[in-house]
Amino acid sequence: MSDASNKPDAQKKKAAALARLPRGFVDRDAAEIAGVDAMLRTIRQVYELYGFEAVETPAIEFTEALGKFLPDQDRPNEGVFSFQDDDEQWLSLRYDLTAPLARYVAEHFDALPKPYRSYRAGYVFRNEKPGPGRFRQFMQFDADTVGSASPAADAEICMMAADTMERLGIARGDYVVRVNNRKVLDGVMEAIGLGGDENAGRRLTVLRAIDKLDKFGPEGVRLLLGAGRKDESGDFTKGAGLDEAAITRVLAFTGARGADGATTIANLAGVVSGVERGAAGVAELQDMATLFAAGGYDDGRIVIDPSVVRGLEYYTGPVYEVELTFPVTNDEGQVVRFGSVAGGGRYDGLVARFRGEEVPATGFSIGVSRLAAALKSLGKLGAEKPVGPVVVLVMDRDQVAEYQKMVSELRDAGIRAEMYLGSSGMKAQMKYADRRNAPAVIIQGSNEREAGEVMIKDLVAGAEAAKTITDNAEWRAARPAQFAAKRGELVAKIRDLLAAR
RNA sequence: GCAGCUGUAGCUCAGUUGGUUAGAGCGCCAGAUUGUGGCUCUGGAGGUCCCCCGUUCGAGCCGGGGCAGCUGUACCA
Image (cartoon, rainbow, N blue to C red; front, side, top):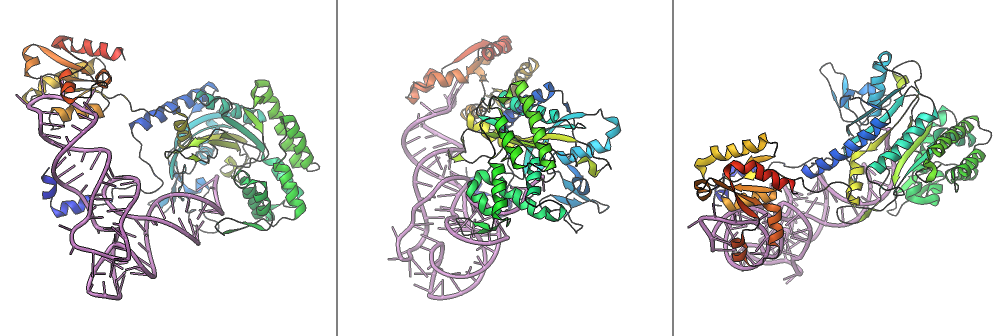
């Protein structure tokens, strides 16, 4: 232990360099990786079952393809990680999986079967302020149908979303798929005089206000739709400046949810009566509701809820999101506000950016990282440390070849195994095996070697047996759960031991 | 971006009116135990008190500026 104090200053200084992560990024350990992998497998199975096929696109696209240049400038939006290539073209890390899919479909349009049903998972990146459950790199798992304008395509994805939640272990009633339609909302906008391109900015303000319904309640939203709202810290948020009649109409829309789907749809029809686009949206909701009922999903798994807006400007029809309805606790055990864990909708205009014609498309995205946190809270994410390898202890340095041979035999038999590669003594090697969550260690010192044996210690059974022992001398003498085996039976004995787990 | 709060050991945190050598618990390493995980005991390593400037005989503590983190809010494809 003396070497630490003898460490040269230069080396110390070097070691003091920034061993830290930029904010909004996380490291994942073996347990988390295993848990998320299991999740991804499950989601993939459901998507496959529904007939979607895999596709992968790279993490980087031309900024232009993502459509994220700042207005009236030749620089990308600050929220997007971007850099310039050799030829000065701007490239960006993708911020979702939808825009790259639109690029992919447009590029391979003639080669793809239409409607084109695909899924893909991957990391996306957002250069913005992180917060609880919000990262600058996170994983999404998307499924999309491109080339179908039918509400059946939207309804199918909603049903698949419900199935996926249940397959992931979220009980019926612990989640809800909420569905709305942008056309209905557009109809309301039109009805209150916010139609047309010149009102795009105000429409956006109204959308943002509605999106805050679950945060601030109807009264808060009323303020945001009107003059504005002052929060507890005294910060003032400018409102949309609607008049009283318009505000009442918007709130009538968001509050149109009835006891069942039919009532909700009837209420919505009233709110947008006389506006053609709104009526079209209501009709689509009606179509989808019929499909939900046919599949039995109208039992609370999927509900029509007019308060769903989704921030995305590009949505053109049905929008939907999956919300968890049980309290989620964070690492400190506090209950945290948990937003939606998945969402999506119809974006008929997105592929049109690359091709002249409009291509109808709908799809959704699961926020894998966020959902993983929720599953962890539910105890449904395998957060346990994976079982480690069998560790062969190095008792005598000149016998390394023999120890390595044992490891090879175990590996040839398909058993995870390793020889201890450090330089510490036996006690430290035992601690190492314990920390690696090893199921067993193999000990061969001179005594065993002379007898043509190995000592096998079952660490799990040993820990169990030792629980009742409080005296250290007794603990050491007892040597619980270990047994000698003939050298030739090593693999067979380990195999038996692991099989008994 | 704006506002509030917080920066002391790997982690969680004490630190008196400004006073000499900055502490605890946990964790880590080692020994007690020549070859056995846990418990216990003993010892050890580990610090730019966030950074800079100022006040002072003297600053972890007071003042100013900066940086970082957290929370709220804004934005969020």
